Amino acid sequence: MPSAEEPDLAIVILNYNASALLSGCLTSVFASKGDFSYTVCVVDNGSSDGSAAMVGDRFPQAGLIVSETNLGFSAGNNLALRQLGLTERQTLHNRPFPRYILLLNNDTVLPANALADMIQFMDERPALGIAGPRVRRPDGTLDLACRRSFPTPWVSFCRMTRLSRLFPRSERFNAYNLSYLPEDAVHPVDSVVGAYMQVRTQAILQVGLLDEAYFMYGEDLDWAKRIKNASWDVWYNGKVEITHVKEASSRKSRKARRAFYEAMWIFYRKHYRANSSWALDKLIWLSIALIGGVDIAIRLWKLRQERA
Image 1 (cartoon, helix red, strand yellow):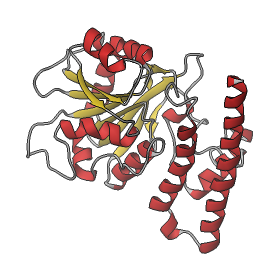
Image 2 (cartoon, helix red, strand yellow):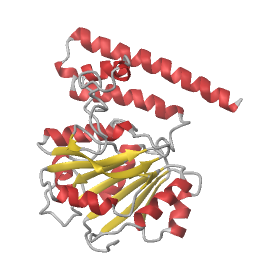
Image 3 (tube, rainbow, N blue to C red):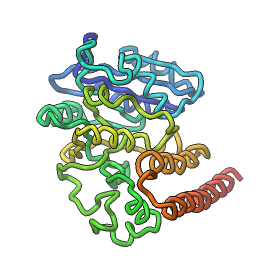
Image 4 (spheres, rainbow, N blue to C red):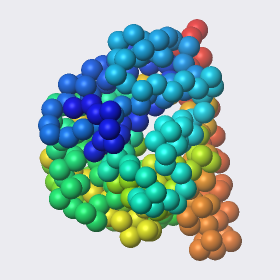
């Protein structure tokens, strides 16, 4: 049930020009069942489609933060986290906080028991800093990003050279998406996806908020890396399933695709560059630039064709 007091769960939903999908998401959230309390905060990231007005009219029980500009994923979510009182490296003794924070995409739909089941899942595992469910696309396929390994130089090489696609069941060549593991399994991973990322508040207080160097993409991997480095576990719970449209707000955005490759470079530079040789460092930079440049050029050409 929604709570006016400090809840078990605080749900943050970032939105950008996806009013209809956001409405569906909120409808599913407020239909949740279970013996737990929660609050919902929508951060509208500079939408021009009336999303903020829709939330105020149809979901007055939801909190609403309106940004005049699109701040990106990290900075937008951090607006809500700061409003909850979460800042860098506090302790739980400073003030009462929700036990868990959930980053939830505006284009997700949750079954009625999903939130209760995920809270129970983390309650039963006190060492868990982050957990995420199985994420299904509307066409029935698995959203491969819902369970991942960190993109080390080797893992990234396999992914960018398509070795991971050639050997999808290989632990060595497809470590990034872990496709060799059963979808309905429950197991530790490096990261889950930011579309549904449930984080223990104590872990956030220990490592800090999302890194705003990432405009979009990569920030969920970065948060998971920092939280794992602080000795917390990250688990995938394939027994709970949600639906995710994916890229609802970014599919036709030129900036989004550029941000994807920028995020790759930021993550590598932050977490792996210090231990890379000069030659490997230059090879990684060149690979990101070349592959990213070709991909962005193809995307732009397709957008022009669609608009012609």
